[in-house]
Structures are given as structure tokens and as C-alpha cells.
Length: 87
Image (cartoon, rainbow, N blue to C red):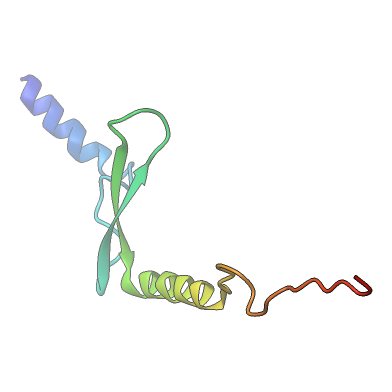
């Protein structure tokens, strides 16, 4: 009897909770895993279906930001020389 009640409750709750229902993405979808690093391990991981165009846009934005960043590593391209006059 308990199994029947649990089965009926599961089917009744599916339309109420959208996470339990089918995903809204129908074609050209990618499964993305997000990890919540707050707190101590083990960290919480969640999966979501997103359109592939959204992933492409995020990757293009990251690549553009990375390309614009100047690299200031090491010494300047000239030598600073101090000249003393009169000695």
C-alpha cells in the first residue's frame, strides 16, 4: 500500500516541481555541471541542460577577455641608467 501511495505522490509532484519534469531544452543541448565550492568537501555538484549557443557565447567572451589582457612580465624593454654629471 505504501508503494502505491508513493508512486501516486511522485506522479502528482512532477508538474509542480519543474526540476523533476522534462527539461525545457529540446534540441542542440549540452549537459553542464556546476560545482558549489562553499564549505568543506565533498562539494555539491549539479547538472543542468543548457542550449549549446549559450556555451559558445560564454567561451567566446572568455577568449576575447583573455586576448585583450596585456602581459607585463619581467623588466621594461629599456635599461634605466643613472648618469652623474661633474664627478
